[in-house]
Image (cartoon, rainbow, N blue to C red; front, side, top):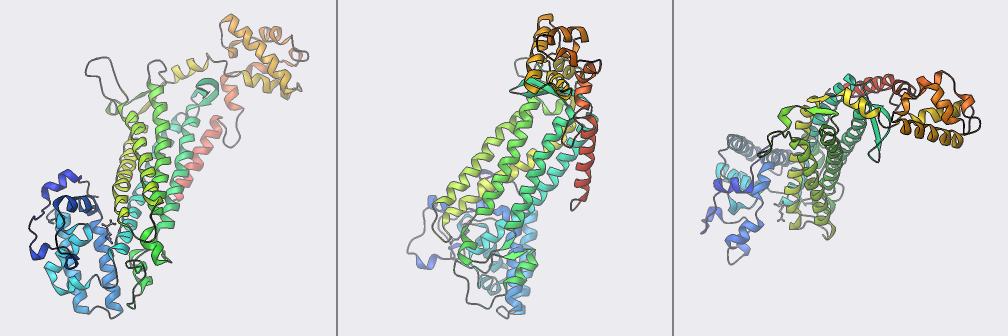
Length: 491
Ligand code: ARG
């Protein structure tokens, strides 16, 4: 993917103030005066849509081959077009292609160059199509590649996440609600929550790809074309699963781009939550993890600082991705059928979304692997929150005490622990009995095994069902996750 920004590209872009006949716009015969420099810049998209050049060539070749098969274009013309396009693709790959602002967008730039290289055959290429169905095809081809890359990167992220989760399948940490210590969980279990989130993200991207993978070409400007085209064969050559079934819809809707941005916004939101946790965990006040130095920066003034810049930027960049989603929804909402130039504004948000998601996933896969957990600190935090109080209530319920009574009795035991300045899990059997005595039926239900139930390890071990935090359940979840990833296409 070319990642040239507008200002960089404009250095290499030519624009002629007095257009020569060759650079006159394709549709200029209808007009009596040229557009101003400002209007030219304002309406041009080649600054950014040149990123779809290879897809544009791919689409044009499939279209030309179909025209030749249908007898609309001669074999000779097709050969010229194929030869010219091969040279153009090579020029673009070498960075030698001269993008020209006068030719507005990627489509006209390439067509102009083709005509310069092969003459009339180049002028015949556009038979039976319009830039409207051409651009709708190019974006789909481009986005399809981006999604395939994103799916691979999500998988790489998940694999590193699973490695860390496996190493910490039995490492206790406090689980929080309201950012207050709630119950013990394992660090591995906590990380697996993000596996599930990104698993749904991957499903959303795959689903978006499936719905997007339909061919718009053939819709022409909006109404279809009078030439005897064969859309199915073009779809097959370009790897589309189906055809867009309505020509007006094919050229005008960008719902697939919106879906992509929505899937991206959710993925980034998940990574932003993880980033927030990483930032919190590595704060010296919490100290649950350390992050490899290569993801952090120092302060220009405070020599002691190690700042989690990368996760902070992930959190920050989520804002721009969310913004792009809203931009595209807003772009679409007022447009009457069919194509309107508004749609040209779909590309920058779309490209920036894909770039941001791709870079974020790349960096994250590596960053997750660079997490060093500090089990001692996690354990110390856990031992300060009376995190196993619920386990004693459950214990009493299992011995026949109604839950509300058990809840009240345990609250008294928590108070006793508070008064002594120790964690609930450190109370002895006698202390528990004394505390529970005030609730009828509670104290006599206590036995020696209550101590194991309120220990951190006992609390974890007890939650051994699917989706629970017991180390064995976490290991089983990891194994299931690995099997699933192995079974995926391209594994
Ligand atoms: N650059 C245009 C876009 O991105 C291509 C389609 C132009 N079509 C038109 N009728 N002006 O949407």
